[in-house]
Amino acid sequence: MRPRRKRVAILGGGCAGVAAAHALSRTPALRRAFVVTVYEQSWRLGGKGATGRDPEHGHRIEEHGLHVWMGFYDHAFAAVRECLDAWDPPPACPLQRFEDAFAPQYAFSVGDWRLQLPQRPGRPGDPRPHGWSAFAESRFAIQMLAALARGRAPWARAHGIARLAGVVLRGLTAEAFGRGDVWQRMDAYDLRAWLIRHGASATTANAPVIRALYDMAFAYPDGVAGNGRGAVAAGAAVRSILRLLLTYQGAPMWKLRFGMGDTAFAPMHEVLRRRGVTFRFLHRTERLVPSDSTNTIDAVEMTSHDDGHHNDPLITVGGLPCWPRAPRRRRGAARKLTLRHGDDFDDLILAIPSGALRPLLTDVARRHRPIATMLEHTHTVATKAAQLWTQQPIPAQRETVTGTAGPFATMADLSEVLTAEAWPTESAPRGLLYLVDTMPDANASEAVVAADARSWLEHVGPGLLGEPIKLAAPPYVRANVEGWERYVLTLPGTTRFRIAPDQTGVNNLRICGDWVQTSINGGSVEAAFESATVAAASLAG
Image 1 (tube, one colour):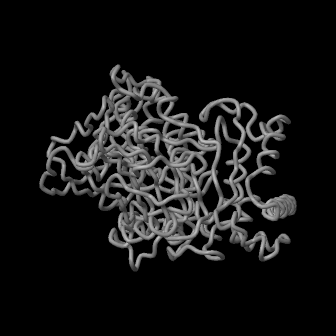
Image 2 (cartoon, rainbow, N blue to C red):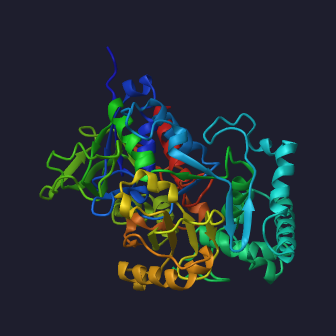
């Protein structure tokens, strides 16, 4: 007699939730072992990576912010590539294979220091038989050193980079002789404090390239960016930069040609649904209820707006399956719903962002001190984002720029996305810019972001692009202030309190997301996919 399939409820349909559903359904053996259901509060998948189409403005792609995947995102790329290979899109769909989905990017700017990094063999997501030792390939080592040396910056800046590299090497050498995990020990310090501890001058520790690292990590707990401000754990920061420079495959960065939601989550939704994964949209998790007698989660309380007519969430634009900017049908009336252990689920995977977790885990944290401690040391920050559709093309030298002054520290040219939109020929934009930064909670609103976008257009943009910017459509702006859309921070002294996906102390509860313990320990798509892989593997044995 065949054993009953284990029922797994995944709470949250963002990066981690979708990745967990993929990991639990990717083989016939796994599909025979598990029944997987994803409960998502929205009408679309992706969480902070979700996108929507605006039919009033050329079916343009509207996002929560800038999403560029790094070439070392092994788990994320492997999962998306596997789903793209399994997908069977219609012939008219412009997204057929990996090369259609992602565009390599070799150049980026840190302030006024422009780098053109070399191409490496392979594609992101390829197996790594040699791991970190791949950097020992002498040819690539020489190419990388040459690229860093000829970065377009004043020689004084180049010498400053050399001094900074020497400090990092000296610090890592010293840390290697300490006790315990090197990165965990480094995480006790802020990055600037760690650099000074190992011999950096105040000038070196506050160099523009260091400011750029804080900007890329949104490392400003109060939301106010600026020179010499912010906090980020040194170990996580140094490790991520080393992985970015030394372990990427193909290109150091990859742009998503159709926005993140349509490039990754629309194909994954179609493939996962074909595998038998069930998606329950418009289901908001309210509370996890621990059992009084066993070390398990006994129930999950929810609010549902699903009236049974939201099982076909996608629309089609130019032959491409896409997520709409609003549900295709009106939400149903709110109703309370309780999932019961033993009746509706056997195991839970909690994939809800950390900013929204505290009210959900109040009762669980009261009984499990490690979970309470993790929540106490989990921090997030509000972010702001703007998309600008321009009448003129973006100069080739301005692909991605971070560490700049003004209301938005990071700018990226995502003009590749325009080919996926459906503008009338006479009004079609020729360029598309993404702007992102942190913002304080006290004045976090879309009106403030819109004012910042106007200020950037007037005072900063002309200097970066070499000419005044003319818009082809109204900007799209977002103030990401809700718990689920805030950015996860990695503050000094906090990573040691993170819990691994399979070590919650609750028998039927796994956790995943960029807020749990991973090899990155920082806000990123890769951390979400990596943690989901670990959570699923622990269930699959």
